[in-house]
Image (tube, rainbow, N blue to C red):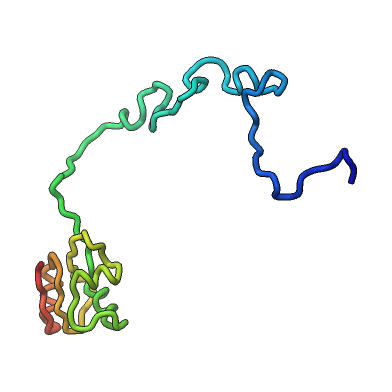
Length: 150
């Protein structure tokens, strides 16, 4: 090791940026690597999302169609086989309500829960939810349980 090959210890330096605008002698003075004129050369420039250089953006070129119902209710579906799995794992015993759905991460506290009829339910449960499908309600009652609508 001598003065011609000294370098800092590995990992001790972090800044590898070009030092722009520090005079002509640096090779990065003048326009500071921004080129001449145009929006990108100005201070305060920030491109709008979806901006395509003045060309009509894709989001405006594509035709719009269809209809979105603003009053639509989004239900979080919970199937009977999921309820049976919770019973088998000992997470629920005789009744299921919103607190149980939230605790087992099947829904969040603000979601509307609908019980769906996939799978079979062997356990006798009192299920409390916002809505039930006809098959789910029939299956719960066939197992000796009760379907309570909130």
